[in-house]
Image (cartoon, protein in one colour):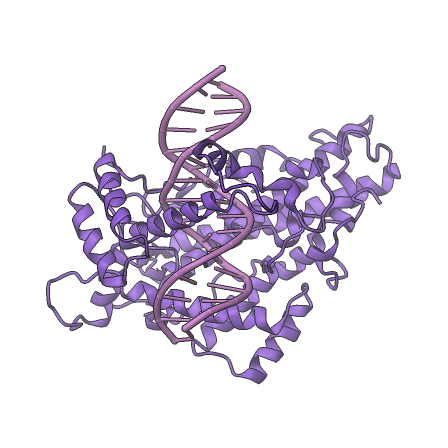
Length: 215
Length: 215
DNA sequence: TCTGTATGAATGAAGG
DNA sequence: CCTTCATTCATACAGA
């Protein structure tokens, strides 16, 4: 067996799924969401009951983790979008492929600031990178020698994806306008993240250098 | 070819999604999965601490579900240059240390394709990494003035990971943080991806067994 | 089998 | 906007 067609997708740029599969996926996500929710509840209940019985014993991360200090990661030098932020960014990106205006950037930044420290530059860079990357896909493969880009939309799309590059497709030519993924099964994605993440959501996690995980 | 169309009625309709959309889904699922995992762990920890540890009390979903569903999901494979390809690459690298132009990349890719599956991105990445690595070697000795640049190969080789952990600028050396995977705040999507991602078109994650979750 | 190392890939940021 | 750099993550592979 050759290392052949594995990689990021030795195939087309589009995946096809039936309604059934779609449904299954949707269900799965929902399930996860529900589980998370319930687990959180359980955890809360348990925590409350034992008043911190074995705090810092063998499980330094047991409680602080969920309740407050989830962020205590080795400090990072560069901004790393949090899931919630990324989600929003992606969403916005879909809407306007073009570069967001200056004001728009500010706006977005404010929005994202709700989920964590972020600067306009971060947002700007993100969009720039995102876009650049999307474009890169197009220059993937020049299939036939000398052929001009005469392919039909679909065709070209396939061709491009054929070489399986990164994981970012070109949303510009997205044939289907179905933007509603499974954004939120039942409970909000953000909701969940909010629980797990930072409740306050105003704490620059990468600046929390010495934050005692244990309080 | 009609894309994005689906007839809910017949159930035969297919949905087409782009890689990006696919990516979104995967990410979301990944996030949920990871969260669930972590929550389960916490729950276990808490439960264990309590005498009456509620093992399998009213929590049918606590671990069976996750351990089975979450962990087994896909894995990604990465391109591995074949000896022949590597040889060519090295050879080219010697000629022009600089990053090959885009056209050059294409050219090289075609060449290497003779020896096995490969994409332009692979080539691109290879050169990028190669170059970065080279530079890295030379910068092994910096801080100390004087001292001739006696970056012996061995030395430079050693520096591979040396810079990692404790080089954190403002962070204290936190040994425990090492395995603490709960980087929640900015829990890398990449990380998450790795856990659930489906390897291209090999394993359709939506075909995972439909666990009975809870009915 | 488990652990450590080499290296492909992802991505934020800077330069031009 | 496009290209390049730097850093980091994750995995294939080798050694114990």
